[in-house]
Image 1 (tube, helix red, strand yellow):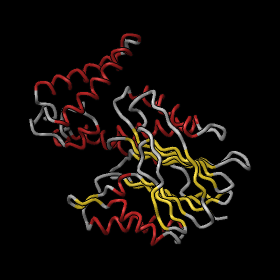
Image 2 (cartoon, rainbow, N blue to C red):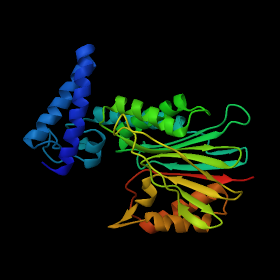
Image 3 (spheres, rainbow, N blue to C red):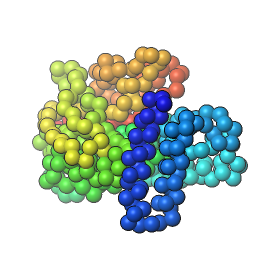
Image 4 (cartoon, rainbow, N blue to C red):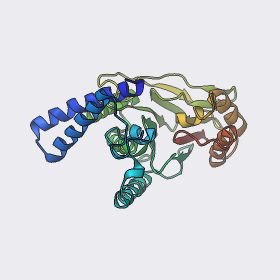
Length: 325
């Protein structure tokens, strides 16, 4: 059994336990059917022919398998009607996901925020959200995350995270407690079969940024001392329901920039070489004084220059924050 099959088997077994409990209490046809598909996939992993198309018996696309380990037929063997149906579903999922995105720029209480979000395919597992204050004097909240995997399955979980944080965030709730509650709900919803890295930030009117990190790449801070990573991290959301999280604060002076990003930026690879946090920091150092949309464009252009025509292997999301007053 390959390492990939081992990981898939563990996730499917966790999903099976969750479904079996659900079927025991609610014997719905859809749940029973899904449980049978999970059992079938586990059986094929044990036999050794999981990942082979049941029509042409060739290996299926690894990205499709990563998105849905229950598929049994490769794209080429689908009928025309099935292909068109799949394309329509993808287009609908992409429209829904884009409709959930926040405004691209926000200015409030001495803060300026802008973001760039580029899925690798039709939909994305990256999550970005800006929550403007409901009344004067309240802080602004930012959330940036990355669900493990790609495609439709990751995009569904990304939408779930969007709803979770929109429901949970309040000005009074410490960000560590926010991540704790979100983690518990996310772990229950995925039954341990998936996880997400995520960073939440609270921008206060006095220039203080509160940060809570759940296994996400370290943000970069550009100030008068140069560019450096902001330390502090907990476990990704969804790994363990009882994980604990903390938060810490940093102060930004006027002109300072805080850059959040997903690993689609720093882990973009040309052969065996990654773009890396060193190139990321150098890019931010050169672009730190640009207007935020231009700063984000410079970050994207630099990684494209590094890739030199190689297609990115992951979604890319960047979010920049500048203290303006």
